[in-house]
Length: 173
Image (cartoon, rainbow, N blue to C red; front, side, top):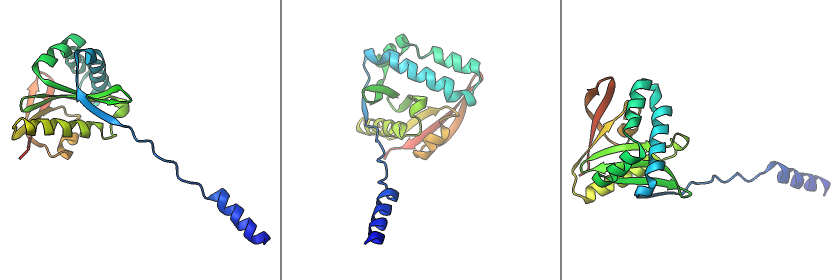
């Protein structure tokens, strides 16, 4: 009886249930003018933290100037801009300009968690619905592997001064 009780106690102290992984609920929605400041902050943070290993600080700062809150508000009138939110906080953005994906950025603290992949799936779905057969993305050096993993194929390099952009395509049909 004592041995059985010892085994029972041992099993209770050594067997611990595995901790449940908390899953972030990511919601994709259309951006609004009120989102411009948050979108700008996400883009600039991603440029400075993630893209800094592939581009000079001069290139990073030049590109960052293009994504001020007023510029984002202007883009809202020219493109379909989407945001990904987690707990009602914007953590990523991407836009669709006819058959071209633009400005895909994920907050550095949320990168590698599938948010960018989910945002791109949404963009591709919208493009298909809009009748786009071939979707183009001007990729940074930093994001080239990300787009390749999603099925995009390199078409060519373009240079704007020091800034190298990789033009990639994906057939949606």
